[in-house]
Image 1 (cartoon, helix red, strand yellow):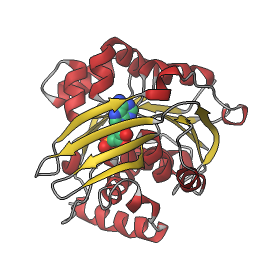
Image 2: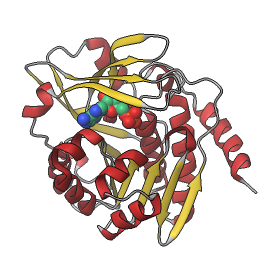
Image 3: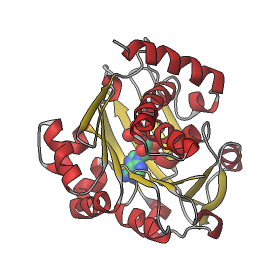
Length: 297
Ligand code: AMP
């Protein structure tokens, strides 16, 4: 089983063509739905008393919700806007709401899970959740500018506490204070991350492990509707696959990265979680075959 901890959010997203308000979103929502295509997935998160039954139904059709806490108050809200290229995103607002007063706990039934993904979220909460798991086979974390700007040292402590980090290029530069991505990755490896994946949006990802650099392209698409959540789905696909094979072997890491790129490509094809809710396993397998042919030389 894979456990995903992170933020459950109402996202308001503006693209060059429209604004869609208060969609079901958040780092753990995307990651857990993506991961559920590979393995049983449990979610730990918090929502407010305004969280609608229809969103809970969506989540429960993919993942186990015994770790979802409801607190009196408003659910976390996030608003962002994309430019005409659909690759640059500006955050318009971040309202943590109930996430601020939340003390996460790990349900008893999750404690034996050996694969834990700490999605983009408050780094101190991420670390307290990780501490509740005994020994993990693989723990991985992500972050976002908001948390690096708030408490960079807490984010560094989180990277030190986990086995792997997945982070986008802009955030890797902000966190490490390096410009060159290879230097960024080396710095994070120096902090103890055995696997470092730097995501580059539509351009794919660079993964560093055991002195190996594994560059991968994004899955090419001719139509991008809403890129939000692509990075989370990348991580969900990667962790979901590794949990399904119960392995962190090099060959499995490479395949997991391929699955990550494939799952990210589904996320951008609709607003919010619309596209990833509809994925068929046969479609994942078909895209993976195309992707593997594409990267073979
Ligand atoms: P991505 O597009 O993969 O970078 O992820 C976007 C998701 O991250 C959105 O669904 C947001 O709700 C969520 N998000 C945005 N800001 C934060 C934050 N400060 N902490 C946790 N999650 C966030």
